[in-house]
Amino acid sequence: MSESRTDSPAPPPPSKTSLKPSLAVSLLSILAPILAVAILYRQEPFDPAPLPVHEQSGSVAAPRENGRMLRGAEMVGAGRMVGPEDVAYDSASEVIYVGCADGWVKRVKVGDSGSDSTVEDWVNTGGRPLGLALGRDGEVIVCDANKGLLNVSKHGTVELLTNEAEGLKFKLTDAAAVARDGTIYFTDASYKYTLEEVIWDLLEGRPHGRFLSYDPATKETKVLARDLYFPNGVALSPDQSFVIFCETVMRWCKRYYINGERTGHIDTFIDRLPGYPDNIRYDGEGHYWIALYTGNSMFNELLLKYPFIRKGAAILERFNRRPAMEKNSGVFQVDLEGKPVAHYYDPQLSFISSGNKIGEYLYCGSLHQPYILRLKLD
Ligand SMILES: *[C@@H]1O[C@H](CO)[C@@H](O)[C@H](O)[C@H]1NC(C)=O
Image (cartoon, helix red, strand yellow):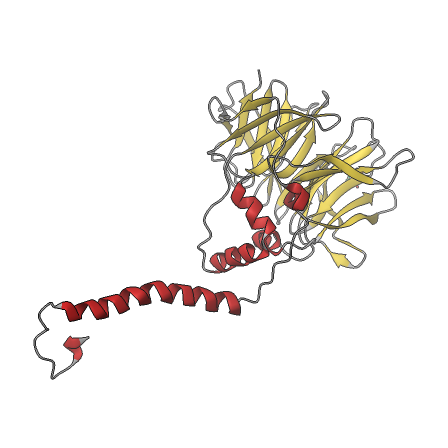
């Protein structure tokens, strides 16, 4: 500062008096950020809500654990797909379908070694395909985050089945399962935020999601449950008595009964999962596989418990400064009653979004990775 003054004399020799400005400077360097944060916090219009997570503390554990699932895992189709969110398998043709971030629904034929797989661009929806389910006429039902519920016929024709219910449009069609009677059960994770804005839905902590059904015979879309906290993966029980849907933010999966005297009732299938559930798939052999896109942690629990922490995170997000918190992602295996069986995860893994047991292998899709991860199950 003194240099800018024209009449400034030589700088004063270092003395006790130089303590004063340096103290002021260091005080300022502490106070200024605090003040800035306080101002930012007060001016931030984003207003997160309390979440009903009080009974959700802690996690269940599985009797079998593999906490280093990346060891021995292979990458299938590496570099030939972006963000294969869901992995659907047609056993008749031995084709794996994946929905990718660039709009492609791809067909994968896996060779013996995994690395010699063929990947074919099949159909581009022009949106962002997430959950996939095989239909009864060889079609693939695609939950396109941007477009809604789509029918891709076996010849590759794309048809929109539905994109709204009760006058409210879907913003994040997420996952589906097809019942034996043809009814399609599916989720719209949010009517407020798109997939690109998904972090805001999680931070806001309000229930913008719905669980729905679509009847291809009548073309009717029905809301089966509303006010859900990011409903995600969907799976039917093998006896067709209920449909499971995962509620990501609540770390649980619910059961919606579609047959018998409990029809229309909802109860808990599994709660206190050791991570945040994405897709769920039944393997035809007595087990469901629930993908956890990140593991649970003390920080995640605090984040969900306290709206002011989420508001802080929202401010960091605005400045692109939110630290990556996703780790210990993987797949959780449960039995027909929802009892934990095994947990496959890795500290290095994030955004695993689906797990599908095909033969001896567990195939894992991911929202962001450029491959399918495949793990031999022993
Ligand atoms: C999807 O389209 C194909 C071809 O038109 C049709 O055969 C199939 O029944 C359709 N599926 C649904 C669920 O509408």
